[in-house]
Image 1 (cartoon, rainbow, N blue to C red):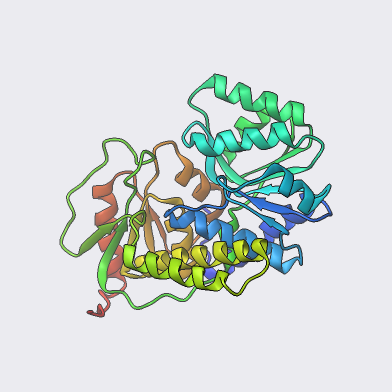
Image 2 (cartoon, rainbow, N blue to C red):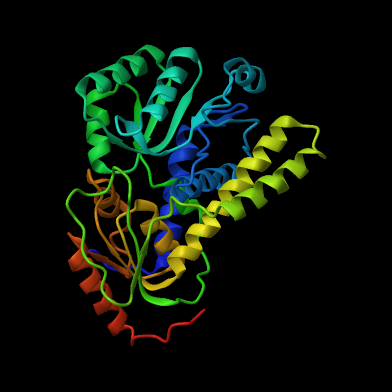
Length: 338
């Protein structure tokens, strides 16, 4: 059995592993970081901020930033010359998230002769033809580096893709240990409400459990953030610097919201990969469920299964029961109201 590790030890180890992999594959030159996550999923913002933390530490901050909808091939070329393009990582390589897959194919087709580095990904193709299309694009490009987060993705990539492939932890671990707020309920369940939710797994919430997902954002807070960013544009003369600032502030706002949600519970139950990773960063004991295609369990098996606060479950009813076992084992701590 793997020895259990405190959060701070495990996070530091995994951050060093991430740095070692990126150091070995990142070529010289000015670089671009593309596919900024302009959506409400907190996990993707955590990944992006972790990617930026690594690049800042290495003195390699991008000179070109973009989401999918504001990417411009020629502007990118002019900004980075022969330098590499880094594609924001996550769990969108395959058929589950077609917009991101189409953008990846576009980059492979339009930027041959330039290093493309796919930051750590989980892979899931439900359609063999789509996997074959990606394989052909990677082969034709010739300078694609693919980083993957779990053994299943690694095996799939080695079987189908002709490129440099490396196993690498998730970039969000580069954020390091985080400070949690006092808990307000015994158990907080952050459970998927999208199409990656495990089919047929729904249980009634016991007393003492509050459940939510982090896809819904407060419209008033979002309006305030947009207003502050509009005001900042009035004093900036560099459009790319303003874009970088906007992306950073939006990602930080989303991360802060996610950390606050997870801190609500003395114990967390989740089937979201980054609710798991952020719970480790916050050192919150939690019960982990898998998602629809094994991404969450695969990552935990590879990297975080030794966290001393981690408990595994196969369905929600079992997860809630185990969460209360953990809560009672901690002496049923006093909950802060308000």
